[in-house]
Length: 149
Image (cartoon, rainbow, N blue to C red; front, side, top):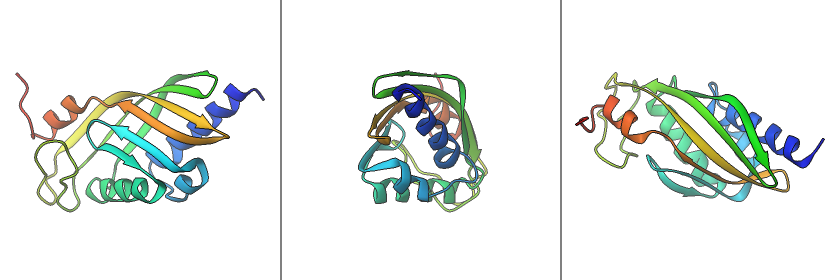
């Protein structure tokens, strides 16, 4: 198996177990470096396994049906893998304020569905960085936290 194929396999598992539903919190320890960086505009940078797990735990408590999945083929070159994805969820959990603008009251029932593109950097078979663009404007509009022009 080439380095690129091995890196794609890591990202495929991450998409399934970290972003999929149900999620597997242990995957952060198994596939993330100790100082793993997850950075999306809607949440800002999160660095370190425990911080990343806390972010995802709170996100999933607020959106219990949260689910994201890879779409299309992954592209790999050297230490980098790029993937596109789709997903979303319904806010039926506790109040949620981990957003760049506004906050959601408990169980707002608001739904979001959006797509994005993510670049992963893999070091020695582990994810060191996950940096993406997640269509935050669309999600925040759907959550009624900002208005479309």
